[in-house]
Amino acid sequence: MRIGLPKEIKVKENRVALTPGGVATLIRRGHSVMVEAGAGVGSGVRDEEYRAAGAELGSAHDAWAAEMVVKVKEPTASEYAHLRPDLLLFTYLHLAADPALTTALLDSGTTSVAYETVQSADGSLPLLMPMSEVAGRLSVQAGAYHLQKPQGGRGVLLGGVPGVQAGHVVIIGGGVVGTNAAKMAMGLGARVTILDVSHRRLTYLDDVFFGKLTTMMSSEANIRSLLPETDLLIGGVLIPGARAPHLVTRDMLSLMQEGSVIVDVAVDQGGCVETIHPTTHDDPVYTEGGVLHYGVANMPGAVPRTSTFALTNQTLPYALNLADHGLDALRRDEALRRGLSTKGGKLTFRGVSEALELPYTAPEVALSA
Image (spheres, one colour):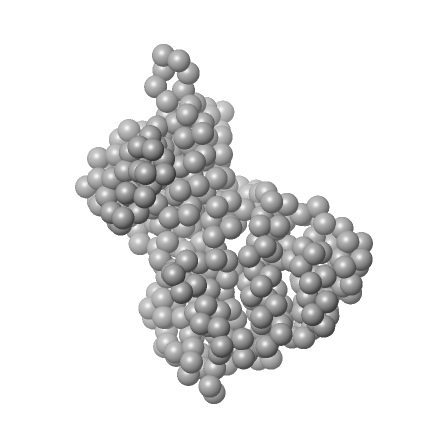
């Protein structure tokens, strides 16, 4: 199969979907890879490294002309023209919060597989996990920075100092994002409270952190009780493929201290904070109700070297399966099939169809057409 690796063009998106090692593996399996010149520069990967791995170098048009395109972020509006019926697109999509892209994929007939909804038999999301780990850790770094007074924050040092109480970090969601955020926040010396709807998950977190953080059931009452004493609120809620529920509503902002910070990692799925909207690395923060909101939808793009290698580690086996077997890989592999988002103008992920109120077609039906 001919595989294309275009350069990411989202604002300050410096990741690339395949490392030279990943390219070399695909080529050893008999596939060809067309890399857009400069695709890896932001991650510290030179064109010469891709060429040494056996790839061809070309333009964006050359990369998008491949049978399968492997990306990091969803296509932007300027890339919609590359979508077509005979294209297999493998990337993050987050369609529940992006009706324009969903329409473009359906109208073009593109077969698209979303990293974030590829799901193993145990319910885990192997292709979302590495970037959730990165984003969870970055959320604390970003929050700590914006809590500084020169950035508009309250002027709170998360770790405090002897004789002064440490800052309070409240994390909604005890999954991969929340767990990694807790690790970072506790490492800085902050007080940490984590909320989740699963008692089993809270028990696990209490055990692995040796009771050094506070666990609470996620409920409106508990969230409201915590907000007045929260310095940094981190949203880490995930419903695979679906729009995130608004657990912090607009009226709740009045409960928070002026200059406190919200980092909503769920922003690419609509956000679990009602007042959040996507921002960019160029302009990451805005203030509403006296509270700083950080809504960068591609947080891992800030550390592209780490993110690129972490992502390729996870995506490469699935990319190899798709390259080796094409659409048959989706028919044979249930985990991959769960990631199928669109096929032949049909929407094949139920969570997206419900969020956008569009007709749903079962993946098995779409693949049999």
